[in-house]
Image (spheres, helix red, strand yellow):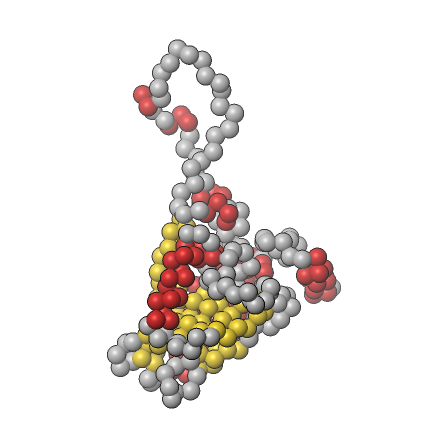
Length: 261
């Protein structure tokens, strides 16, 4: 069953996102591989960041049972509790200490097959990389790639968080795809509204080799069908935060209503 949305499905931005992220990276590599042979190869690179402030994702990306682990008070040794003859005010609320979460982030790297040199990098943004403190490290990585003469494609299919690419003329849209050509000093943008299909974008290689082509909509449609995301998406509920505008909310409701009849 296909997604009820023409482009990015906002219901995938919650608990399903880690699977979507992994599946999309693998599908992009599969789409690119036959176009790159024999001079280039697409490789999946996994790096790990520590989400030190996962509180904002509890109930969205991280289920409570996986993040919040309350230690039973009975398991605390009495010897560890200071003894006093002075009566204390009874505790009315006990909250767990929220621990950092290790997040595995897949990227697609295009390397030349002669020297294994990185030519282009495709980053699919993670919630952890769109807020402090990881956004600082991610922005440093972007600069390192640019300084190393690597083309950078960034795919932001998450509405929450802060976009690492910032500009006063950046449009206010739900989703964004960008391409920063190595040494160009400019970034090409594909703004994507909720009602839009995802773009087909070029993937630059080394001159004079022609660009590869990446159909993001075809890739998203493929993983939605292969993973059966419709079976885990409750379209009777409101989409995950942030809250859509009144206009977008009415469009979502009308689309889901029309598809159910």
